[in-house]
Image (cartoon, rainbow, N blue to C red; front, top):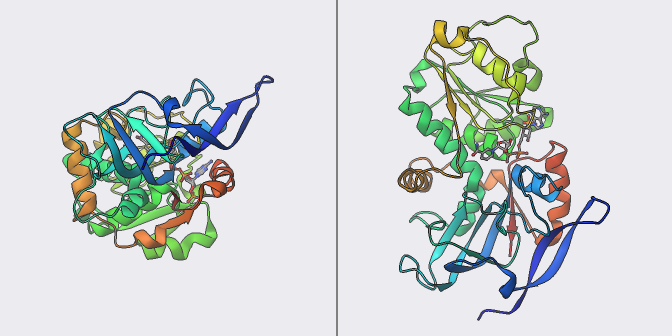
Length: 331
Ligand SMILES: NC(=O)c1ccc[n+]([C@@H]2O[C@H](COP(=O)([O-])OP(=O)(O)OC[C@H]3O[C@@H](n4cnc5c(N)ncnc54)[C@H](OP(=O)(O)O)[C@@H]3O)[C@@H](O)[C@H]2O)c1
């Protein structure tokens, strides 16, 4: 039964320019237009949501807004022949949670081009432990392998390795037979990273070269970088011949200063990772991989399940760079 009022996490812009956030009652009629109405079962917290929740206009232009770029649930109404009432679906990417009302609420309504039917061999909960983070990590490895990356070339570095994308990258690489070097700022998380499959763990500083040299000794055969700035520059300078660097994120900053030497002398490939508009054919392929051969063994170790009331605390941890693994909101 569809209820008219439901709970939503709402960010408001105040008259003085500050932002407030909290749980409010919303009515279904206020949801955006769309073909598919979904009762949300789980949503997951991503870095973009933490930014949107703090009023970052690069992510969300207009408030009030309900963030949440990842959600899954059960179709309650459908005006599309692609979806039937009762279908279990995953909604990520496109404009979901950015300038379109997102997953931190009991109901969502989206265009029929956005949801993906939950693959066989994947539960709704697993789909959100994976979510955009797992999708990003998997798309990174997919593109790296398309460019020739293989385990025999040597270890692959993951930066921001205890974060959502980082944790997934460590686990998926290990699952695929890669030796994984995990760079992390959290000394206490070494056990966690080893359990996910990291072969060795290095500090954040070890991937923040200040020598000014254009090339460094070969230290890894490729990298999945979630950090950007000098960390990404260091990934590129110390990458071995013909290795690939998947550029996913910018938690350090959006800047990148490099020379052309790693590209013209070592053949390093820099691969842009953009999940929001990934073509549907590749999107379905990546979800299939995540449900089967690439499903990490340790999804339980990566997840933390909270309620909508707890979201504020976890947004703060994420903004302070202290989040670990994947935080799921269960409805
Ligand atoms: N390209 C795409 O389509 C796409 C999709 C999803 C996410 N992203 C981007 O990927 C990045 C990571 O997202 P996420 O959801 O995984 O975030 P997250 O869970 O907050 O993880 C980020 C991790 O980066 C490390 N870190 C934090 N601040 C840092 C700093 N100042 N310098 C170096 N390392 C720092 C921390 O790990 P350690 O403590 O272990 O170092 C932290 O856990 C974000 O920039 C996000 O926007 C991009």
